[in-house]
Length: 120
Image 1 (cartoon, rainbow, N blue to C red):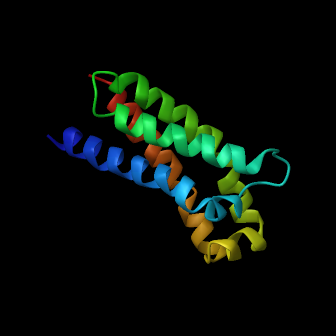
Image 2 (image 1 turned 135 degrees about the horizontal axis):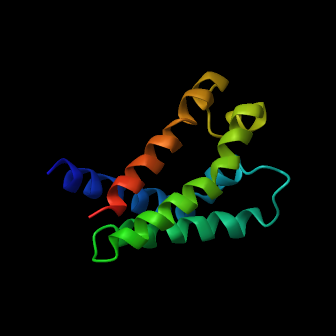
C-alpha cells in the first residue's frame, strides 16, 4: 500500500515539475552549469522526460519509467552541484548555500524511490 501511495506522489511530483520546465524555464536556467551547452534545450528536454516518465509510473511500463527516472536524476545532478558552488545560481532560485547543500542528497532519496518503484 505504501508503495502505491509513493508511486502516485512521485508521479504527481515529476509531472508537476516537468510542466514547470515549460512554464518557468528561467527557474531551471539559473542553475544550469556554465560548462554545459544548450541550456534552454536541455531544460525543455528534461522537463519532457519528467512528464513522460512521471506518467509512465502509473502504467504497465512503471519499471522502464523508474529506470528512466534514475538515469534522469543522475543526468541532472550536475545542476545540484553547481547550485551548491555558485552564489549566482543560489540567488537565481532564492535559496541559501546551506539549503542547496541540504537539497542535494534528496536526489539520492529520489533515486532510491525510483529503484523501489522499478521492482514488482
